[in-house]
Picture 1: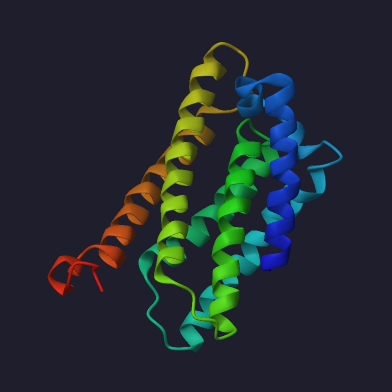
Picture 2: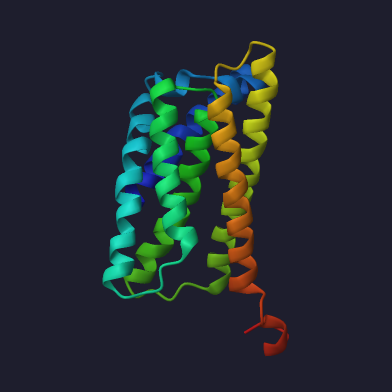
Length: 197
């Protein structure tokens, strides 16, 4: 899965850079070609399908009798539903949502792969991943807001209900990931020494 996510991040990332360089930021947000262009069409479809095995990793957590946090299963279920819901309408913003998700998940699942292989990964790498997730959610909210604004001008093909769901989803993720970051890396750290260990 890590390999698929890395390749997806590279392929959609290169296409995103192409759209940004040739057409600008506004077009990169409103662009629907991510669903149909030769470079990204396959990876858009693979992105939607990848949400099933990503949700499936919840099974491994349960089988290993590890703690299953609300953020984990809520995030995976809602991303799966929203991705499928948006893909059928091929709405604006999909390129940004896919590219960001591929990039962050390629880092996260590479981290999981290394940990499962018994490699000791420095704690700051996990902090970088959570920080990138928070940045992804903030950018997702921004893109959703821009889609709404530019849809009013007739430039961004989307639907009000889709924008509402994406905004609620990204806002809830932003709050949950920020709380997770605080709980995991800062809460109680001040009483454990200057390095927070």
